[in-house]
Length: 403
Image (cartoon, rainbow, N blue to C red; front, side):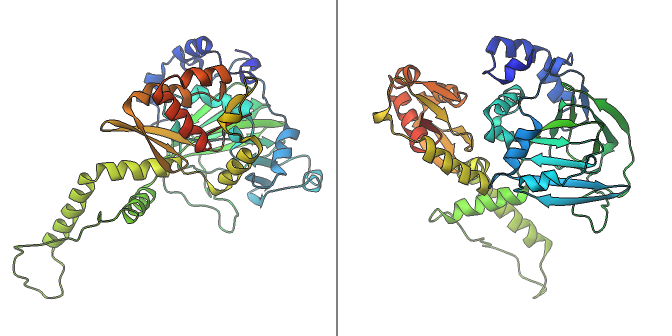
């Protein structure tokens, strides 16, 4: 596959051929998930053959100069010091940089640049809600962000130039970091394995594997990061959903309890009973729990919410005014997912819930996979009541807009 795959929508037959041989590894997607995902690293040589980056270093720097685009500039001062500067930047910031030892990182580039979003189509072996973003980093010779760990899965795709990657021999959930540093750089990093990656090569790392990438020349890396909610986020979402519903909360009861022997003691039996009460309440509120989780997983970051609103202001137009030469385009800054509850489809967009008949499931699954809907496709979808209802919600919620 050549670079053209990143300039046009991915051909379905080409993707099917590609995914039969998972990133040219000889594995299937199922084998990768069973044997490697969240378990151990894997190096893919030429995961993307003849790869050419859809974005240049100058274009990346341009994004880093924009307001509301998350960017960082990291300078390495040998032998063991790194400094961090947050964006946005300007031309003077870049012109003052030395020839060596710095890295520019820009988050959410899959939202800001459509050609990069197409790369994420190759990572649909897990559901979309598990994907976070595609971060792009550009580094000159010697540039690095220091040895560190991440709490999430990541695929590191070499897009340009060469980078040496060193990783730990095992996961390191607890590490000691350098004192006084702007970054969480591991103090005593021990190398387990080391490789040099060239364009098209890709390294998968499960959570907490320490890694250190050093640019050997001007190079660019695409980091496909995944996300998973932690227990505090889930509990907070659950409580927020409970607060919004009247009559959901109940008090703990302890009828027929035994006589207390110690006035100020908390017995193990009481702890067990309260825990059982809480677990029973959680088990009985499965619909509330699923709603809370789906809201959480589709709620955009604050900075992306600003972009979503700006995108709608530029693109937005109601369907009644649309003409055959227009398209519906998907808002790249909003998340959506659907979930079946009893006899209906619950659709979640940017943390809001919408309800559709069960018959809308197949149509909805197809539409959510599209980034562009032509006018005649839109008319075809709206021929059925459930299709028309789905499109009305998708447009009103801002997930699609006429262009």
